[in-house]
Image 1 (cartoon, helix red, strand yellow):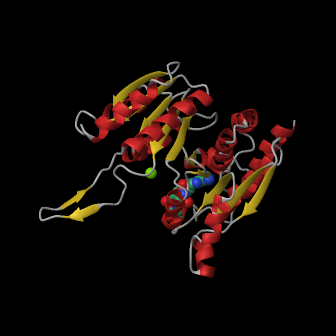
Image 2: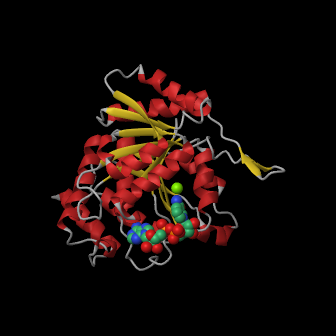
Length: 328
Ligand code: NAI
Ligand code: MG
């Protein structure tokens, strides 16, 4: 039995969460859910988008499923990453059938450092303009690289690529690259290489099959993961994981999509795939594969899918179809 914090949040966040919890009932793992508030709607009633109580509920749980917040997203999700020290941002770039993609096979993962680099928020004006501070520490580089190799091992992936710009950013990215190769020594069974971020951006388009697990610093990871999302098409399909030493938070990449909210038209796939990532995090790998395969079947058949996938099904109808595959 796993204690799971559930934060539906705003807009379609609530709908895709309902749909996903409905599907998870057919999974052979016991969950003990605690529902928690966050987001715009909660802020309207209470004055705060992320109450301390919610942070405590997440801290006291094994993992957290998060739907989406609206305008308060930065105060909710960014704050949560800091409070829980969720130093890994994990984004799979994986092709699913029945979706728009430039290639017919794609399956790699981006592991982005989530706490430092270009995003520490230290900018200042100078006489000439402005500067931003980029911080790369040995500790953060070490733990993100270790995570990438452990993830590769756990998910049977054979190669880890460090992405950096050490030819120009000699000290910061030099440290990141050197740390990567130090960590790599403990994983002789895993192939390693490293590439410059600019070349990587090109290879995403021309030869993305060369990648398996990518580990990179904050800003590069942010940009590359959106490029990856573009490769496999459609926000309705893209999950993510935020992981730290003690906590894991799993959420679709999309937001509250006000234009879809309340209509039952949102695609539940990104949230369902976030639950797949949660099952992997809990090392329930058989159930993770079973859930993912059930969704793949529904996508492949293309009959009971939402409008963004050229179907006519509602969010709950599509989820129910996934559940039926699991029960068969
Ligand atoms: P969004 O991801 O909510 O929606 C952008 C567009 O993508 C939608 O109009 C819709 O056409 C499509 N879309 C997204 N998810 C979909 C789904 N499941 N099924 C079908 N189509 C889908 O991003 P947007 O419009 O930039 O932001 C809306 C609100 O969400 C804002 O208030 C923003 O702050 C918040 N947001 C929250 C995030 C979070 O909680 N992590 C992340 C991104 C945005
Ligand atoms: Mg981004």
